[in-house]
Length: 239
Image (spheres, rainbow, N blue to C red):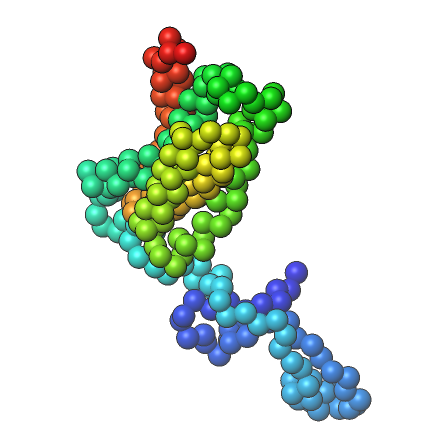
């Protein structure tokens, strides 16, 4: 079928493919002479839907933006290796995701002790346990505002400060209200870190290894859960 757009890959088109792919719309022509019809149709036709951003089919190659943009796209050099610095930065960034898993693991074991200590009802305990995901969702949705304005590293600092502040409030909570107040800050810090971690890791990683390194954030979440359960096992004898 006829195409309704034009192709252009930066190469000056020849006179033959000047309007390649553009749809022609003919206006009515009442002239009876064949030559006049041909001449009038040429001038009464208009080009529609011309798009100059796609490559010409005769020249399908795309212009490479820079080396390393895609996997195995490294020009004449071999695939870039993951440097120690990249691994270190990715590891530190993934620690933010570890906070979520650790909180889940710790509170699973400490929930009953917390209920007895603060005389919480079953509903209050359930709200406390489940509210982390709600507050984390709010933190993740609002993370772009600070991340885009202050940068990724400052975002990590803010996420860590908010998380620590919430943890301190929870540790010294004397009632349900203060406990939930601290829980809100913990959730915001966790969600904020979860949203920024994969973005930062993907930005510092080589294209050939970007997928591998970004998964560290998810792996850290599961490691945090294991550490949280181990912490509960270690302190299981504490009343």
